[in-house]
Image 1 (tube, protein in one colour):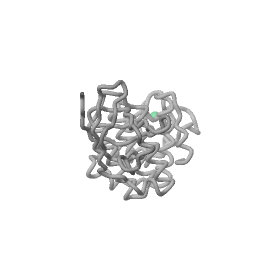
Image 2 (spheres, helix red, strand yellow):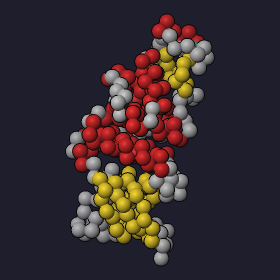
Image 3 (cartoon, helix red, strand yellow):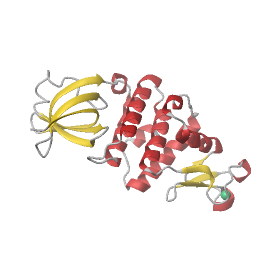
Length: 245
Ligand SMILES: [Zn+2]
């Protein structure tokens, strides 16, 4: 018998057979964890409103089986607004999809877990899905070790309007100016204010990050950049992007 206790966020739920659910969790220490919830589809009482996407739970599970069995779940936060508004739902889903494909079992990261909770909280109360998504993704790529360099053009170091437009280079995680790239129309353009805001968001701590507001254009450019960067690094495209951009 190996009963374990953990804090977690539900990042994916799929029905499994007649009565069960297969739930993927992200945990601060255990990382990505697949658990089976026996009878969760039938028994409304035991797991009611708990095994839902984005729920913050505290669970008891038994890992003596190949696929651990969840025995108890206590709801800490349900982030209900995320299930009531489509764009918030799409943004939270995209965050969970990133967690699902970027993390592994037995490889938890308490800092990443805190940022996940921060982003679900921000989405619930700010109602600014694109802004929150940009800020979460800057932190995610920083934690993963793929933090792009936004300090200036990768070749000449400039961040100067006379060298605009600047473009993002997915293969190197850097920006390049028009003069160095000799392209008048970069494939993934980033305006100078967007580059500066992204650079700042990597550096700001959690307590101050909520105050960073990107305008509509910067959010769009930054999200498009993250879409292409993630596609390049993971060799995978998330369908959810089409609801965000
Ligand atoms: Zn340059």
